[in-house]
Figure 1 (cartoon, helix red, strand yellow):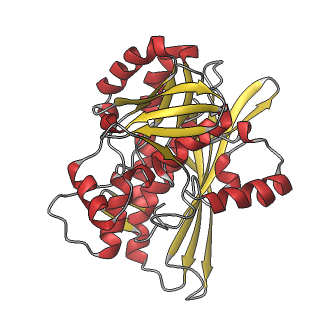
Figure 2 (figure 1 turned 30 degrees about the vertical axis):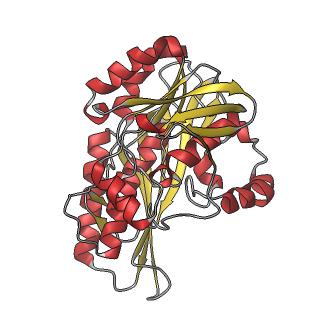
Amino acid sequence: MDKDLILLGHGSGGRLSHQLLEELIIPTLSGIPVAGQNDAAVLVHDGRRLAFTTDSYVVDPIFFPGGNIGDLAINGTVNDLAMVGAVPLAVSVGLILEEGFSRAELAEILRSMREAADRAGVAIAAGDTKVVPRGKADRIFINTSGIGVFRHGLEIGGSNARVGDKILINGSIGDHGIAVMAKREGLELETDIRSDSAPLNGLVEELLVAGEALHVLRDPTRGGVATTLKEIALQSDVTITLDEAALPLKGAVRGVCAVLGLDPLYVANEGKLLAVVAPEEAEQTLARMRLHPLGRDAAVIGEVTAAGGGRVRMETLVGGMRAVEMLAGEQLPRIC
């Protein structure tokens, strides 16, 4: 099942959201168990597999360094399809516009959506537009859905992590969340921090070479790396151990997080993926990541260290061990 359909926002980042999901939303709408909750649903019809996903975007501000709500929506949907190993084919676009919203800004957002779709190689195939009275929405909200096909027989999902697997990420964490937050708060930063929003389907095609050794793919959006890994640990019923020293983190992002009291592990990303790979293929997969433009700073950041527990822990820079849990709420709301 598509996890975006049943979350209050993909990877919404808090224990309260997950409690609501587990106790009310999922049992009422679908009954899909935790193990089946991934970034996109995998549907089987006449022996053929299709991937389907949906997500809504309410980011504030709608324009930020490195992108805007439009290309963010396209990239996010493309990436959710790619995270189950599907080739994205087409997306739909639903626009909810507040009365009085700038026509010029809408035109810019639409252009960026078309450009993002062209970069990802997908068609914008259907859509809908609604205008609501002034004050009934915040300028513009976007919903996107997407479909994809499979060109392989692999089953990639959050319940497939195994003891010994390595945890890889394709680059630095926290860029998107900090870029959006800095723009929202009007922070004057000496360093240009930009959103990492990008389509990851091309990178995923390179990773699929690993075959059955590629167990899990997930993009750590809302809730960041911490929440995403916690979800995987729960789905697979394993314990994951991170190495803080191995986390790729830009100095500027680290500095802003330190000043504002934010933990970069929980800050949203929009052009990053986590890959859980069998140990015998980890180095080759890392090398393939680093050959791709979106994976030049890829790193191995952890390992599946034990069966059972559904836990994530991190070996800190000072040599201690810290538990990594979901936050009770979001550090930064309306990031996606």
